[in-house]
Length: 431
Image (cartoon, rainbow, N blue to C red; front, side, top):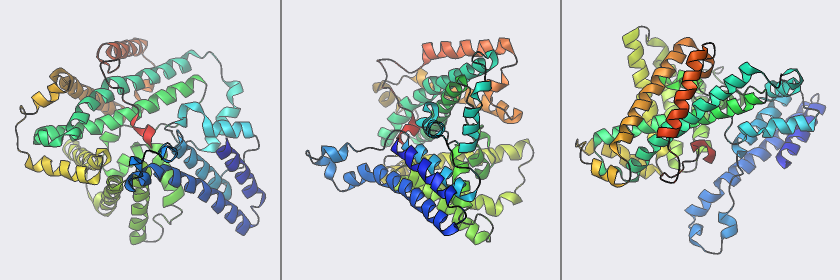
């Protein structure tokens, strides 16, 4: 409530003083810095406490209990973007505190986005009087999104987590094949986990007549890193571009400045995702990948089946390699994992006893592989059709109902839930 009030009042003050550029710029800088400061400080308190060794002190319960409020990263990004847009004259300051508070804290997107822009969202809020409460197509589409999202989470992401967690807990117990498989499994775990959440959020909002931003568009079908970031966490990618990359100068001041700006954006992206050097390295890697793509990407011909396949494979390998740093608990563990990928030899039957001894049967691994193939096939179809699966199947009633039935049965029969499994929270809730 306080954050909404600050952003609401700050935007009105900026608009009121817009003719006095110095004063408007000062108000914008102060309010944006306030949100950035709170986000940085509160987000890093647990990490600083751990680094200083204060987490072992028994009487510091107040310090260790300070955590980032649920969804505050996304909340702060929306506020910063809104304040900057009002300063730039791209948005008018909202006059109704209720509409503005609902834009900031709409429940479906609060925890992990998508990061919505004020104009598009507020227009939808004010147009809800024209939305039918009972609209069979809208409700059908919304439920399809939600069913698909829960399938991605319960059947795919959480099943992959069973294997990924075991491999990352003791990578020295696995050979090269298993370690490579673990990296690939995590690539699809983090994707289906976050895409699943987004589909649930989109469907839930759609029930209320609100269309949220599509956050994923078949990212692992991308031919290069630039395309990957246009299809992965789209609302964050566009936010970083509009509010960091472009204000820094974008590509308007020569190639060297462009590469510098690109690296700044991805370093900040890595830091935003988490504390520790591993997240920083993850951001730096994507910055280097993007610069490399800018330098030689346009010179490469990726047309044709073979060249297109090679380009997609190389992009996926690069993204998967970077995910190792994202998943590891520290930079040291990430480097250890990578080292073992090249030095642990080949003995695929060796780790089976370790895996099964920790509650993961081989059938679950086979199911995981099958789910990865299924997701990638569906993404490939959606990539070519330039649409999303729930929208693609709406016109054919038989396919739609068959799809919903199969997803529900899969969740009940092979979904990972219940007392026998450790419940996995959504990965992006920690950010």
